[in-house]
Amino acid sequence: MNISRTVAALAVAAGLGLGWVPGASAEIVVTYVLDGRPYFTLAAPDNWVVDTGFETEAEEGVPEPPMPRIVSLFPEADRVLWFGAWQARRVKSFDEAIARFADLGAFVMDETNVDETRDTTINGMTARIVRGTGRREEQDVAFGIVLFEIAPETIGAALYLGEPAAWEVYGEAITGIVRSLRPVAQGGAAQ
Image 1 (cartoon, rainbow, N blue to C red):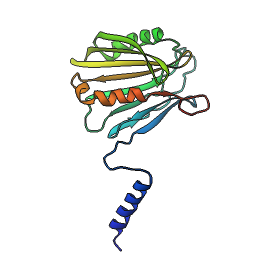
Image 2: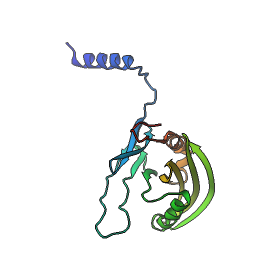
Image 3: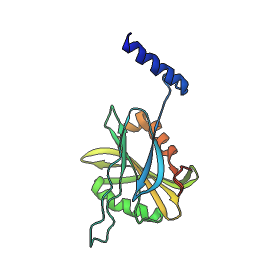
Image 4: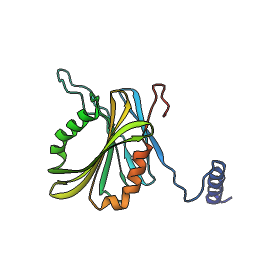
């Protein structure tokens, strides 16, 4: 008995039984959980690395909330961009989130220029998209910020940061990740 052929036959049979089609895209859905509560889901494209980060504890006597868990995504073959998503602790509006990003911008980029700001809807969530360019470590970068209202006064944030040419290669995948963002109902199911 040839084990390789048996394993291959079982894989094909299982794939056919599950509706698998060779060459079809199959995303991985990630549920973002913070403090034991699920907030949103997003889909990671094939051949992208997912890093779920870790949850940090609040420091005693420190008024600022701890850094949130950040789900990071980037193409497996190419490290020319980074995409991260998180629930913005203690941020209750888009304007508040933009102010926090402005403070954070000094640590992430040397210079920033906002090219576009627009309001939209993503899977029923009110959202604001900000796109622009900047410089980081003496290199030109492009960025995109997506703020989305998971629930009233509960804001999620996603940030794309990469080489300007990376958008030409990965823009469709990044847009797909953003379009995949879905709030999680209190019961735990994506809406």
